[in-house]
Amino acid sequence: MMSKIPIKEDLSSMEKKDINNEILRVGMIAELDAVNLYEQMAAMTTDKNIKTILLDIAKEEKTHVGEFQALLLKRDKEQVKELEAGKKEVKEEVGE
Picture 1 (cartoon, rainbow, N blue to C red):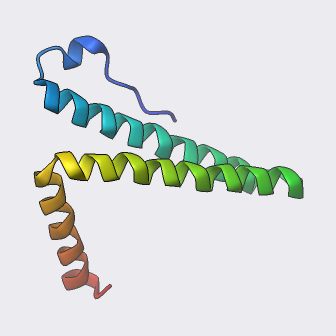
Picture 2: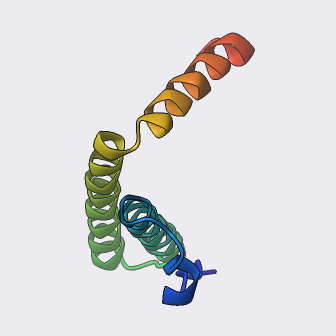
């Protein structure tokens, strides 16, 4: 299932910096949806060439997620803090 992108009216009351962060998050969501779609199709196909191309495209989409995330982390220090907190919680709870 593809995620729903917020419509402009949902963003109209936000500050510009918050709109930009939301745009970056929506970009990440779209790319993650694409990764899921391509990986699911790759798992379904029996054609080796189609599988190879789909997995290659999925990998490129993961790079796009990283590009959006890199920009977001430069702009949203709370996000940086919470990502670090999440990493710490995983280490404490499961040791990884």
